[in-house]
Image (cartoon, rainbow, N blue to C red; front, top):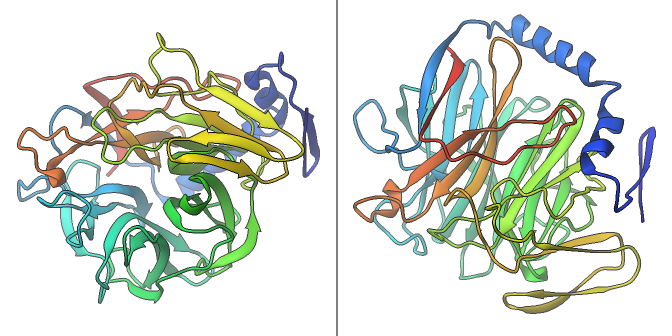
Length: 395
């Protein structure tokens, strides 16, 4: 089945041809030069002073005052030689009420975290989730996108800006017009050329997941969106490694203590076309069968979902139908952080372990961080359930 052409590459998806081989063909010509470029950029930025830190997945992360860090379903960024952890603070509420707030913590080294304040200025009444902050090199502003519900469950995407990574952020549009209706979970991605993208779930269209290009100021949609990556999905993430773009998502999982799987898609353009295969799921127990991948190039495709049936639009579409959700790690993905190291950047998968706190407080739920491993051909390998691991971090 032909799945399209992007730039100088034209490729065909053949059932018997592995995804690893496809990625190898697409990336081998430029992988070495791209790594050398990034290593040079890291040296120029001065990010060459490092020490080793322990990442602990079995104890709650605390700030310098000893308080448990309450920042969930957000992102971790590295701005101006400092780390910033953004997330939703749930406190002791159940997560469905109007008490949710956005917080940021900062750290020089991924070990010592300081609470830096709440993000949104003059926050309207509503239910808030999924904050994501990026820096815009065109406007020199920090841009926050977030998912909120002024009325349950009428999802909207809001956007706010600040001159500082810790805010406060001023809302410039509480209801961004996107190409598809009722946006739910979403996250931002900024490419190396400064172009911004938003990957999100369209809850009004069967919880389908797409990538949408942003305007140059990142305050709205440029009107270009990818085809559907997955149906009945949630918690989408988009990131780049070398010259490959990876999109991750899982089945719907609202504060689920069992966690969710993580299906992987790959492309050579942020807007796709994205390719995947049933077995490329980095958080699914091996003893379970892989989910069904249903693909159709022309015409509509009826896809069953937990809430009914919907029709994919006539184009090249891929739907993942999960017969059973069987994650290896009892966590739901929220972000893939790019961390500078002495050799080259490393990629850290971050996920929330809902229902994990011993005291039952939502804001005390643990996070699980895993170092992503890649095969020589560019495939992301399955995540391992490790209690502790180590990383060389900037100091």
